[in-house]
Image (cartoon, rainbow, N blue to C red):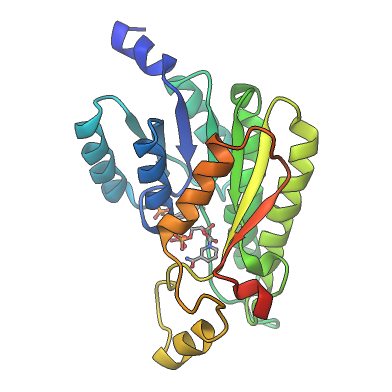
Length: 250
Ligand SMILES: NC(=O)c1ccc[n+]([C@@H]2O[C@H](COP(=O)([O-])OP(=O)(O)OC[C@H]3O[C@@H](n4cnc5c(N)ncnc54)[C@H](OP(=O)(O)O)[C@@H]3O)[C@@H](O)[C@H]2O)c1
């Protein structure tokens, strides 16, 4: 290990899955601004991840790395854990943010969609937690859940089930990994419109059910992640809704 490799390994590192874009990018930026070094995991968004890393590294040289793995494939989480441990044997924080999201009307669900949605939203997160638990001792895990883990999203049964499993995983691992690792979750409501088609009418109908009357921001989610991950040493097994009051009105 060179001198600069050694100094990288001594820093406090956070790993954010799906960290190149959208909500994941906001989490990466917030943690980096809090002084964490950040491993930016991506799958297809290699270019966006690289640009983000270059921008943040320009502020603090050596403070980011880009890691790539398909968390939906067998061996993907273990490969990511190995890459992360090569950067630093210890991690302060793991944020399980990566996710696939699309409708799966009953009658049309096939094994591929099941594997893809379960794999990206919960299987990958579980095996990553398992593989990194020893490296996370003294640190924390924050899972990005969804308010639809508790109330099903119409036409999205498999996604809703996967997020429900992720929410139970949060409580279960909080018990299993205590006292070494704290495990919490953040459940966003609507913070960014999904990519793809959605009519203005559908958007307005949804916003009418949000008590605070507006779409959330990725930064709203990132602030909660930073609090649970870095500032809440006596909190474990909790899932905080960041939804502008949407879950009061479902
Ligand atoms: N957006 C919202 O309003 C909202 C609402 C409720 C909950 N959430 C939750 O908040 C989190 C972030 O939301 P988002 O809308 O920003 O997510 P997103 O854009 O749908 O996905 C985040 C990232 O997940 C990565 N990913 C997907 N499948 C993967 C796989 N098999 N292996 C590795 N990485 C994979 C992708 O990385 P690449 O781009 O590199 O391929 C993608 O950029 C998600 O967990 C989502 O379920 C979001």
